Image (cartoon, rainbow, N blue to C red; front, side):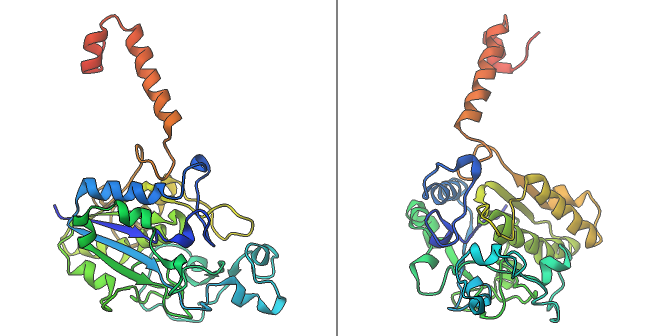
Length: 322
């Protein structure tokens, strides 16, 4: 089995204190370095053959910035401009609706395909905010640092790209530093299992996972090759729930349902889901579905069960009681 890990946009702008900081209500007290270190620990443990690190890499004045859409009103900050309602609560509706999709997406709605979400200025090329979190890179082993390939996205001024595979219009624009398209790198690889992590769970990670299924995993399945995509739910963070923000967090079940709907839309049966997709959670520090209190409760429950059990010694070994 050949493994790969994709780390989506773990950049300074998206970390606490950044211009578009992400967070998690369940673990709001975790330091900024937690996510990056947790992902690095996972990579070091798995020791995959391939490591891909994507970066949002916007040009100055990018089409996704709310400041550009709202200059006439004199409101250049977020969320006040988005929350004002003048721009659809942070959405430029139908910005791409007159355009032709270069490569068809079989998931999502027309609103998801064609609307432009408006965000505060973030990840501008050449700025510190666009740099990958140093806590993550410093925690990577030297072996995994050597494997890492940087993938750049969102660097077309008038088209946004949440996905690490294709931009808003389905163009395969995300690329490595040599200009090789990421979709071509994936298709030419020998990867059989790929893990997706990073920021933001409900936007770039979600779009990247669905696009990898849409453009790579499911077409490969139809051609006779099985690739497993694992969405590492706890090694992601959602967009913070600020007023006017155009997204809300996605639950594990919502991610699974979106994948199932895509599989059906591409003419494949429900049995394919378990072969090609998994949302994995539990036991990872960064994302917040499990925390110390949850783990402590689980341990206390085991202790109580053992205490009531007459055959405690055997119970601890076998987890069974006569």
